[in-house]
Image 1 (spheres, rainbow, N blue to C red):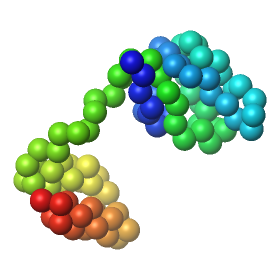
Image 2: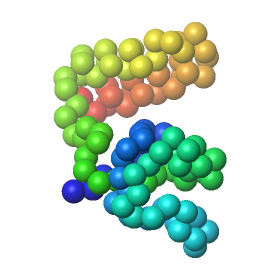
Image 3: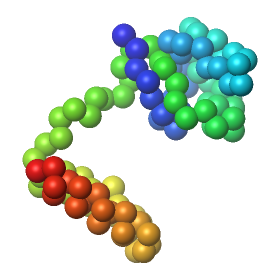
Image 4: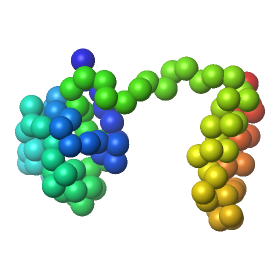
Length: 101
């Protein structure tokens, strides 16, 4: 089993299921266990996602009730609710959640 994840969610010890290729060159090979230095390199090079072995991150297929989703949204934005752009983003996401339910 393998999972495609954002590099920002990677952690040392995760093993690449596929090589990381940048500009046609293999930056990190398949089967390599990630280190802090490798993750920093991937971020510096602007690599958005990698494919790792296993399923290190939970799947987000279960959404929960509308109330649970709204509570989760409030929790995610709690530290930045004072910023106007973040408040606008939160409102957009809340509207999308309301349309979905």
